[in-house]
Length: 307
Image (spheres, rainbow, N blue to C red):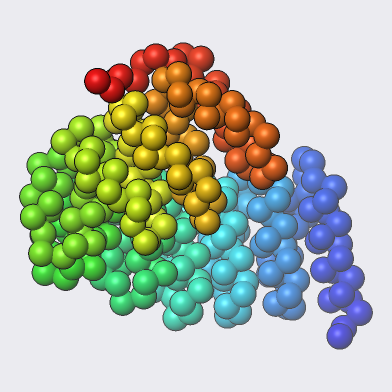
């Protein structure tokens, strides 16, 4: 290994740890270094520094010959969150490398700019399940401009596309999706119907309360999680008892969703359960409980009481 290249990599890492004004200016020229490892280290280090002046130089690196460097540039641009990077990142959706494409979808989701909606819709086709999953996550951050194209996608011939569109719409929580979701409850595909039920719950539609309770026992963790989140949005205290078993769910995301739901419901039993959970040894669960109890301070007794 060349000693000079080794030295330049160490310098890049050290500058990143030092941080502060002017460090980005010192690192940016190294994005054109002849050694791909130096370029890779610099691209990732610029993420830690978080200086917006790195955006334009990183955009130019999206066409780097080295796949790891391109991946690092995409990842850092997503973290920096500058809208200037949106259209260059859209071009990276066609990168020859799958990992770069996957990172690009995630980066566009972090930025959350509606210009990415149309380019992301075709990725709901399920050809690559990981890419489709990230696309639904990303589209769920795009705001009201994503509602109409996702609604159209709910009528696609491909069940996987309908499923993904319904999931993204549920994340948006826009009331304009109520009618399309109600139609989707009659979909021939069971998974589409289930996601539509969760979506209606996320909007706060109480008509799907019983269906959401049933989904708490679904074998797929993301449906259990979604049902718990939706029940929290509905905030009906009848959900407290069915939510209790999921406090021991094997998936932590499900447990976190239950904690949040109990905080939203905020009735006496929910508060008592959350208080007991303050002893949970998992740091993330403990913090979620503290946050949920903070919400009950405003909403205690606000949940609809069971008769």
